[in-house]
Amino acid sequence: MKTRTITRSEAIDLLRAKCVALVDDEHSLCEVAARLHLLCGGFSQWRSDELKQRYDWIAKRRPRITRRELEGLANRWQLARQFVLDEPLSCDSQMQERVHPVCRGWAEHSDEDLSRFCKELTGEEVRVRPDLAEKGE
Image 1 (cartoon, rainbow, N blue to C red):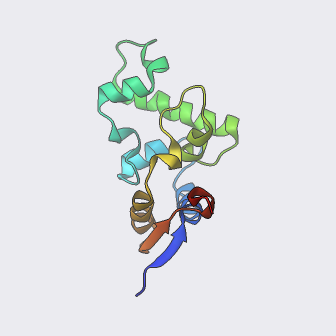
Image 2: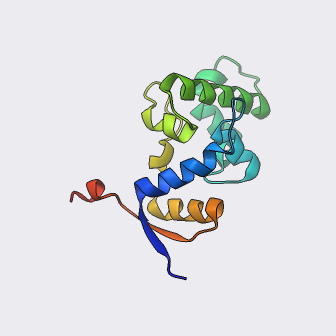
């Protein structure tokens, strides 16, 4: 079977459609990705000290916070930001986040990462190429 080629935007749309089905009002994609070992790994991609640095405005106010507590508060913060920014997923809200950027959302990932994520979530092997605007065409 021939590998289909899609743009970054198409890959993100495909991933978004799959990911929206995995989240709810209590579980951000960061939490789901950590729990299910999907995509970037969500909160689990960082060691405890790195997680505290990423969410320093939360961790500084609670010097004895456990990782589990921090992940719980970070999950709630991600959900709140999604609501405020009217975005379906934390990857989308992080693309817009200016006050407390934790990551760069979808922009954090290479085309190869997005290809791997598509295979992981859809079972389909795709090759992701840059959007035409990204190539300056």
